[in-house]
Amino acid sequence: MRKNREIKMIFILLAVFFTLFLALPMIMVLGQSFTVDGQNGITFSNYAEHVRAVFEDNTLFGVYTNSLMVAVITALAGTLLSYGAALVTARSTVSGKIKSAIESIAFVTNTIPGMVIGLAYLFAFTGTSLQNTFAILIICNIVHFFSTPYLMMKNSLSKMNASWETTAMLMGDNWIKTIMRVVTPNAISTLLEVFSYYFVNAMVTVSAVIFLAGARTMVITTKIKELQYFNKYNEIFVLSLLILLTNLIGRELFRKLAEASRRKENRTNMNKKIKKMNFKKVAAFTLAAAVTVTGVSLTGCGGSSEDQVIIYSNADDEAVEAMKNALDSNGYEGQYMFQTFGTSELGGKLLAEGKDIEADLVTMSTFYTESAQEQNSMFLDLDFDADTIDEFPAYCAPITSQEGTIIVNTEMLEEHDLPMPESLKDLADPVYKGYVSVTDIASSSTAWLLIQALVSEYGQDGAKEVLTGIYENAGDHIEDSGSAPLKKVRAGEVAVGFGLRQQAVADKEDGLPIDFVDPAEGNFSLTESVAVVDKGDKTNEKAMKMAQCIIENGREELQSYYPNALYNGEETDAANQSANPKVFPEKLTVDLLEKHQQLSEECK
Image (cartoon, rainbow, N blue to C red; front, side, top):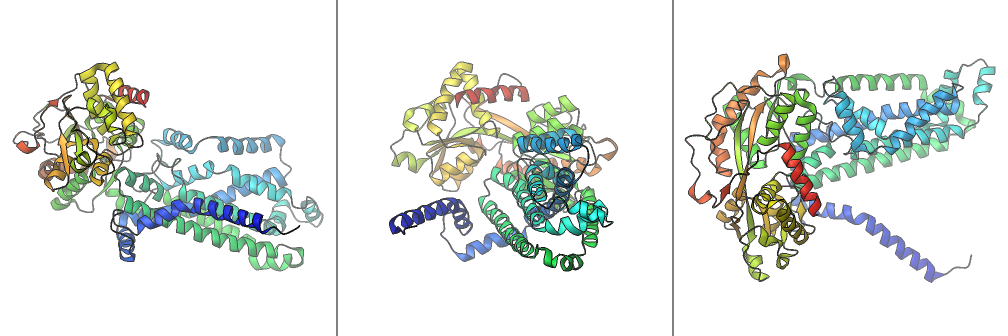
């Protein structure tokens, strides 16, 4: 072909453009990992600080090692299963019906979303010995990704000489010996590619395992999902880089091994290679290792951790730290494991798993606790006196009360000549377009405080009209986390947000350009309560004592963050007293939440 420098340069530029476009997200992650809260510039010391913090945190580093173990066992077992299935369909004389069944399974697993598979496994195995184990994560991953490895192996085996088995039988070898001595050596490169495929996908998957991972079996991707809820982006970026580096190293290693294998896949050195690799011993050792490690993983974790109290919570960082401090200072350090979730995620687990849930102790929005008890009768009555101001069910006691309010950045209001809002209805004014941040009720109960106020004041239709205007003004600033709007207001990304009142009060006291406005529609509130799961003979007796410890020894610190008085003898500080406290006229239930979630979706 005739050389054309202009066309060559155009295609080089296109190649560079698309390469940079694909690499840009990871470059951003890498850059963010070098910064502190994305503000103080790129320095190696900051980066080292973030990485060191992750490796020094046993919880964060533990989920990384969990992910490695799950990925390796998934790749090992998945490769063996894919190879076995492909051998049956491509190199055996079994019934055509069996081959068709395997083909159907492969194609069906390829069409089902990972989240659907995860939910199916959640409902199918709740209450069994597989629940909250590494084994169920591994099985789910193998099924989820089975289709592509199976087709890779089948195509590879189908291209091999079809007469090998016949020739071997004429020489006195059976089918198994032929597979081990002849077929497998010629399939090594494909087996390595299948192993690599399973390993990489098991490291990065989240949809299929998000509902299946427990406190002891948390993997890196589900931990990132949890950290995202709390906006802990420094930890997220470092963990993301760990996944990237692990997969890059793994891919390069598998690629080198596959290339070396392909170079050796010829008949002249086949006998030499067979003797060298001794496939019988390798296969026996591999299978034994897979069975052993998978058997150990059935328990999630071994040892003394089985005696620990598992605490599931939807609480914010401040509340979790206060509860941990109360437990640690009263002799329970090392005797519990905290696992945090978003409100909707934990609520879904309570309703779906009931008494079979992994947790021994739960701190959760009271309306979800009540709905879970009504549906599953899953909580024990508390055996200690909770002297609450308002009446609560016998099986739960409140730990926090959170009110919603309008939060503003005073400097941004002045800079953009925006009026100070007085009501939630004001946030629908087009003058605030692009300057508003709110929370999505589908993921956070904080948004319910806003919708309760709108429905209570303006009715269903009026609330729709106002909420539609608020969403239009918010645009891309509709957040998953209850604290995200405050953080955006604090950072100057938006001028106005709706969030938790006590957080805005604290920021204002710290001298930040933050103020708050108690909306004319009212300050509605939600409580979070502690409850002990009734597991019959398996109930952890320490859970009740820890619940009592949190109430009796943690309230002082909790009230410093969440100032509303909940118990007789407590007082709400005058500076933190909201101007328009109100209570929604209907009882707060999951059914009412779903009704308001539907209203919210109609307004988007």
